Length: 174
Image 1 (cartoon, rainbow, N blue to C red):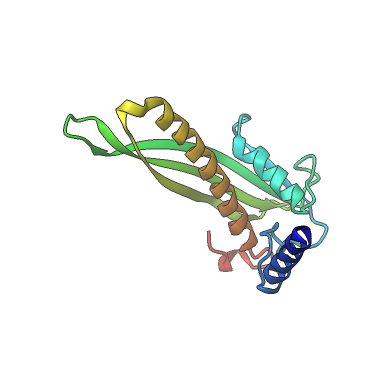
Image 2 (cartoon, rainbow, N blue to C red):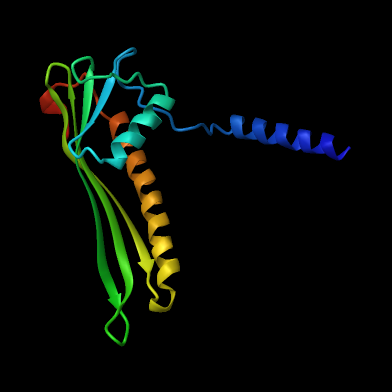
């Protein structure tokens, strides 16, 4: 009996979720069908480029092996992680930091036409600091940075969705 109730609850959850219009955020659909994307990072140790490639491939975007094969090339020019002190305690020690993760990127098509030129995506988080909990706060910062990187990749994908690949250069906003 309990097993049947669980199956019914799972079925109802799936039906309600599907009927409310919720869906996984997939890959950009504004590129012509069958067009291939190549992701290039100027920094060979880029975390964002590898994860972005994996997510887009899983989302069904055909990925090119080389820039020459690609219809569109996404270039990640720079990845930046910063940490700024925003508050200090009575002893003059940092008690709160602002973490910033940024990426500067461009998109061009196979003819060399720039679709997006040096766009920047930023993610900000606040980290409260306690000198008595250095290890745990350090781990919290690492987890926040990973979360920020995922959000940054989501913002890049959202921006790719908004590129009008058919618009003339004067109508495109950079």
